[in-house]
Length: 476
Image 1: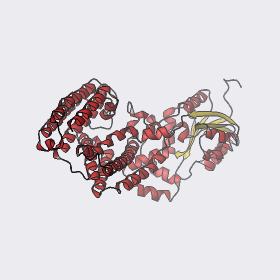
Image 2: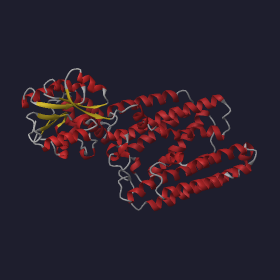
Image 3: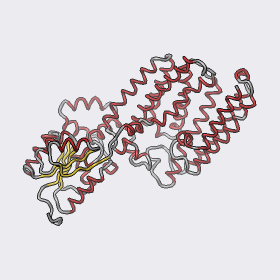
Image 4: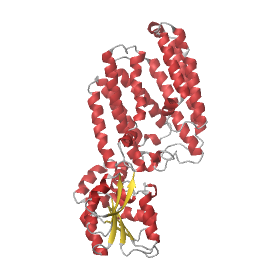
């Protein structure tokens, strides 16, 4: 066929998981619940009238920014090419007409939109019958991505598949002659590990701090209890990270780096992530039940505070950093409750000042980038120009932490726990050097986002950590 002559058949393209790498029904439902979680009861009621009715009721109440949706570039490029040749292109989807029209307007390469209208859910056989009524049997080519599209392919001329991985195209190839495959990356186990933020589990090692400073590390039973506490916090924290990513999708997609997160990129299904949340929380609950009740209260408080943080407290200036610092300290408190070792005033004061400094450092780094013209400050309560003030607060808080440590080392309790205090005093200059080094790194733009993640990859920080460990052992 001459490339200058457009094909006689219409090109029909599915939307969810085909033109875009996500599902607009899941996106809109999430946006509704983000607006008010109590809408879940309305959703259950609307569903009794059918999926099309449910989609329309949700669409009437939410607005989606279609410009930041994760589009599949290979599919979009193909549709634009065919549209430019004069071919009739149709966006056919089970999503509501409002969202489908917004997407079609944004990409600018569709002649018509065929979507759910509140009465008919345009998926499967409903989609196929409507397309045949408009374009005739075998009068259209169709790009789809799932088993529900078999019904549409039955009435199509050419079968085209948008897929992740090679398995589904092979299954479709057993039933049809596949004209074209649009391949995409498969979201595997590593993608889920990234979404669960396994690297952030390092923060949960703080539950072992009471065991170490209380010299209970020789007691096997206490070590086991501390390990169970660590695993419980890991499960709970991963659930919170998933929830935070789900709630933050619109902001993450406009962020300089966070747009690469698994859910923001559309690498992972939203509904699967939502289903995984209660499973992780159930695991955390089961593990917490193996420990003293005070630990259960501590991890429960941790979840409630982080939930409040995700739902909106993180957008209030200074409240967010105080919460972050408190969550670090709460891990230490929970660790003490797990092994039933009382915590001293000195330890809690030191940790609060130190972690407040690190929380301020995180916000400072984000603000520095925002002041340089990026959008990393989106969704936060800070403005360009606040970074200088945050740096002053952060440095003061860090040095206050070292002062508390020095006062503690001069207390009578320390002399009863350690044999040689000279080595302990060397901890103070090491801490002063490390915290100064971290703030220098932040000021020079080397810390991008989380200071803890930076520290575990920073050679200078690792040497300081090793030095602190050696001094602690020598002082015993």
